[in-house]
Image (cartoon, rainbow, N blue to C red; front, side, top):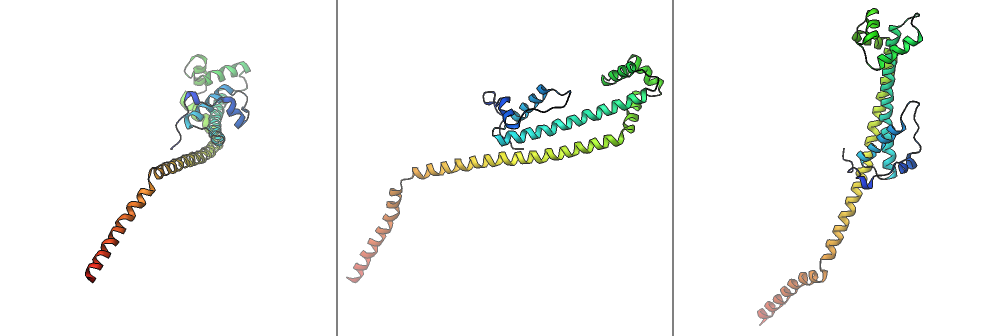
Length: 217
């Protein structure tokens, strides 16, 4: 994609100005406002957004990426919860479930109590994961469909941004070409050009008249 050059540090747009354009950041519980702000600023720098409309489109592009990230986290959480269901039963206490959940989130598959629990249920880490995903197949498919919609929207927003930036570049090029053309025209001495273009014609006419008089004599 042919975007503008990224903003340098001296011309970087402050986050306060971006907030004025796109409004306050609205996040879900557990999400980091600092992480969102840093990601948005990175997108603005990478795409070289400068105008209000450019910054607005970049924020929408970043929101698509942020939602895709949310969906991926949701899929992971869904799968881990399914694994927890497979590893626990009515006799599993709340504290044990919390401990198993923590170990699953930390991916400590082959350590201590979790390894024993997995083996006692007749699983390995690999087929436990497969069984959990199979248990939640319908929900995972729905999440993947939502991701696909966001990816499609992301592509459309990127095309809109590219068209906007290329239009601005084209306008700048046309303005520069007009300025160069105007400068070149001013550099030409029109009076000298007219005199040079007329002189050969007058000389030819004089010579022609001289020949005519000679023939008459």
